[in-house]
Length: 189
Image 1 (cartoon, rainbow, N blue to C red):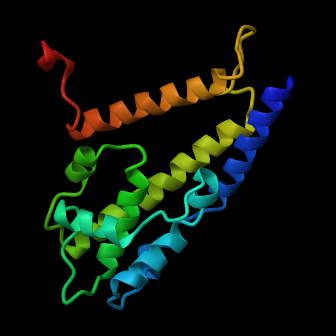
Image 2 (cartoon, rainbow, N blue to C red; image 1 turned 120 degrees about the vertical axis):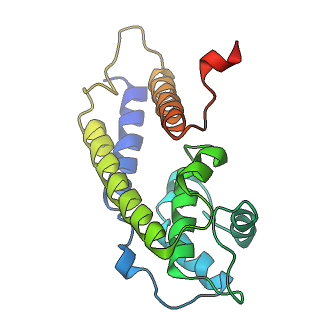
């Protein structure tokens, strides 16, 4: 195994270990008390703390981001500057999905004026499906010779990165197509 392959394998294994150990809180574990903006930011950041070390980010969510989500209709406005558990759940979903979907696609998944029960259903589904996806990807990472990381003799240092980026783009495009946020190629003619 050459040095660059060892380096990539080490980085991916470290990332997989972080992801494998990260589970979002269950709906019932989200605070039932109404929270102020600063409390929401602190809690959301704690729930997404695994992202910082991976991406070199300091803050996965800020008050400005939350205000923008309200303006875009992705989350309901706070009532008397207080946010409910449904707000926090939506913020977590948005912050995690915006890394892989356009805001238009997220808006289709999270229509305005969702009820508390609809948000609960969406959050539970998101949490469950995120765990399934993490489990699958972690398995692929640990199976270094599996489909994602198979190596051709002519691969260079960038081959793994390119392969992952192309796969990510294909999955993103597929997801956007399913929610109807991606224009149909036939419509471009």
